[in-house]
Image (cartoon, rainbow, N blue to C red; front, side):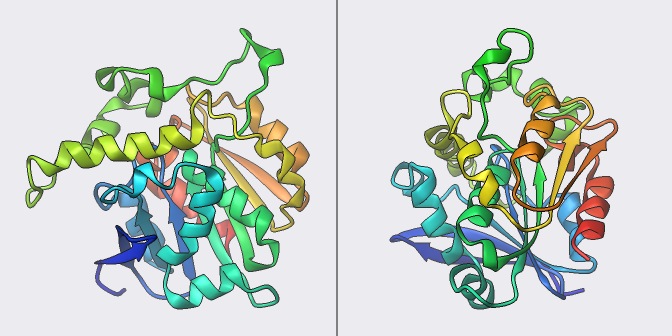
Amino acid sequence: MSEQGVSTVDVNGFAIRVWRKGQGRPLDLLASPGGLPRWVPCLDHLAATREVIAPFPGGDRGHSVLDNPLGWLVAVPQLLPQLLRQLLVKAGLDGADLAGSSVGASLAAEMAALWSASVRRLSLIAPFGLFDAADLPADPPADPWTQRPDALPGPMTADPAHWLALKVPPEDTNSIQWPIEQTRVSEAAARLFWPLGNTRLEQRLPLIVAPTLLAWGAEDRVMPRSYAARIAGLLGGPHETQVIPGAGHLAELDRPEEVADTILQWSV
């Protein structure tokens, strides 16, 4: 397995950090509302057999410029290595595998809808993007951007300690820059998905023809599991739904090995 590496790429004039580790066919992972402030165990499990590429969209000031789904979709391919960028942009080539969690899953779905020939297999962990007002108040999704920071761990993970561990500043982190970066990550997601995560994704889901895995934490308190069935019913290609026991909205934090194994088995 190759060593973990980090690089900085330029997207629309702003610096974006990209984590990379592993060898094999590329697997791109788009992160949750918490971003990727640190390397997490799920990525290690994926990198055991694949080259994992994980962009972190905190950036300098890009969070305030890339403020709509189309802007991010145009930018995201620039975050990946040259090969994967070409696969995502040019039709007719062998596709890459894409995975995403929460807001990252919504972006991955949008990419698969717009560039269907460039995505081989798609794995979505509890994606945002849909909001059905007819279900209120029976089965509403939660809005994480209206929560106080100290109240977020409960909704985001089945075990709040997993969210708190994600947010602990690494030893080599600038103590002043760290909270600024975390605020920018939250703002970037909010600009895309507030209010209520409704991007009208349902209009593009029929365009997704790549085989799609929907992974849902059994204890998800942000996106009700009923949304998995709604998404599945709109997808244009084959699909499968897997429920991850003991996991909350960010299943990859609660159950890293199980989520990694599920993604790897789907992306063989």
